[in-house]
Length: 260
Image 1 (cartoon, helix red, strand yellow):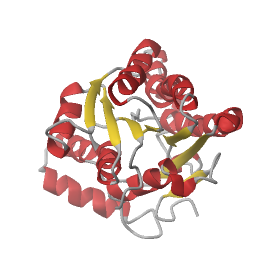
Image 2: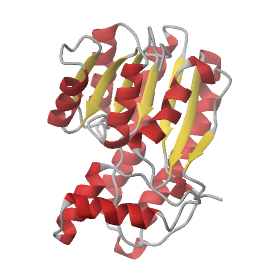
Image 3: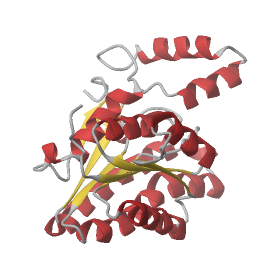
């Protein structure tokens, strides 16, 4: 892994599990210091303790990022702890299932809050923090289904497409401050959250649910499988570090060929 994030400080939202946790692990392995932010404070604490028991280079922050004040606090605590902010990975996301005819004001408020407003709020406060030390990188996690249609995911896919538009606009707005903004679009990815959810819904073991999801994943992408969270995290790491210094406003399809 080398020292690709040596001397850098990152904030990862949704760091308590899935792609967020995998991103935290890669940033840590690459020498970075990381704020692990999650609405589930216990999950964030568990990730920190499993990777960096001494807490020298990781800190857990519990925050509901759909609240602008909470996003400001999370960024502020990160800078207070580590002295700067160089990278923001907006990974946190939620899903709502069903066609648009099933949508309610409550479901819209929930999914827009997490999938779009939390990205905007964290970025709002990350930008000035990065600008003070010469710039940085923001990586927004969207979805391959931001551009590839499917059934029963209208609200989720709409919010993930909005993240792509926000990414491009932010790249235009903040390039002169030395801040790069890019998006990663994962395809089907095997996370324990979704495995456990399927297991509970079906009344089956976690192992059986995982096997079913792997089989389901084979029907979509050209590579005939689901991604491991770490495979998505590698793209986030690339965009967060200096190796991608000439990349901004881009959309990276990490989807096993689903979008083609």
